[in-house]
Length: 266
Image (tube, rainbow, N blue to C red; front, side):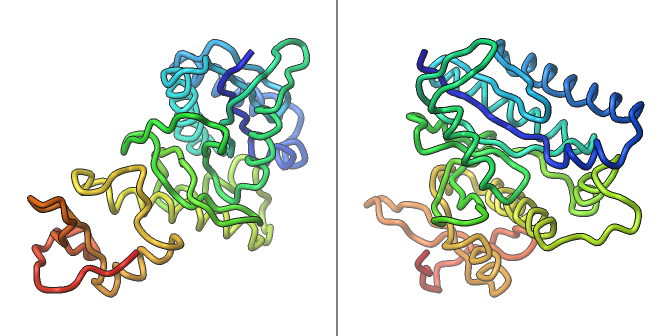
């Protein structure tokens, strides 16, 4: 059966098993299963499975079906971080067989892409036929991977907490140990996630000028480098359809009328 499929992993599950006594392990696993069930219910996704730290879910091969998996992903991300249950995942499209063992190409595609991601987040695989772009759910972004090509992918928006709360969530309640030295892999995962949130918060107030399916910049840090130099502009088409500079963005997202400086190329 052709469907959209979500595969998402709970990051740090092995740490929970190693760092917590059995009673607390059971409590954390209950929180995890409750998060998945609640997120699926809120999004109207009826078909899902849990295998240890991995959740598999699918939806009909329609735009509404894909939107359901996007909503489920947002609920998993936004609900998981405050309870120290961070996830990373991907959505793919193709022929899948559900049963005691669920298998198919989209499961493999989503699983492989998810394992390569270097953040807390969910994105869409190239196999997805539709991209329901929206500043409330899906935007174009160079999703950070551990290796491979740096390409723009549809990335799911979610409410990323402030840095202090976010980092605390990634080391608390069994995910970390007292006195543990953090690795650069962990630091990069945090920075990549926060950078994505900053990008979205910067451009959201200007959604009338920026299409969610258009990435503004080269690599993620490019946008902020231009911002701190006050060289970042948003554009709007004039009566002839030609893009003209309208706003110069500055730190704090103040909108400043600008018609005197040239528009930098992205």
